Length: 237
Image 1 (cartoon, helix red, strand yellow):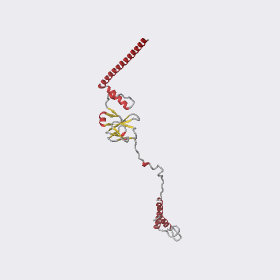
Image 2 (cartoon, one colour):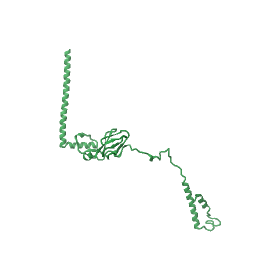
Image 3 (cartoon, helix red, strand yellow):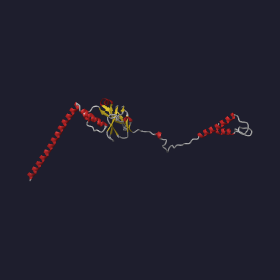
């Protein structure tokens, strides 16, 4: 059964000689003998291949190399998660941000845990505001979103459906700013907007008149004081 036995068996089979053989002018060997010879030679080669294949050596570094250590990582996924992105729909208790320290602040509808992670305290839509270094994460409840808000396309930013005076004046140049300016202009054309604008102008006129009166009174007081000082100085001389 071993490779050595098969090789010796194959070498002992006669191929031909003066007494008899297939190529030396003797009696021709039968087809069965030739098949046996070929089979023994195949077994010898196959046995050698099996024996050689069992000899294996290490061909990759282990301890000192990082080539094969890619599957042993333990990622933490720091930063804003997919559920914490602008306009994402979240459920109560879902983690929005994983951070070290307080890089991102918790606003309405969110809370900060002992490990500085931000989580949603109610179901709603995630919104971000603030500049770099002072970013605040909030969650707007679904009830408020469905009744009073609409979302700008391709941005995830919520904007109001109706304009109110407390929303102030916005600058153009951004998608939200352009929307709010247009909404304010449309509101000012309504009866409510015109009444509010007229009342505002009257208040501004009264405030301006009051400031002018105060300035005039202060000016007269300064002039009277100067006159009194001048009279005292002349009487002393």
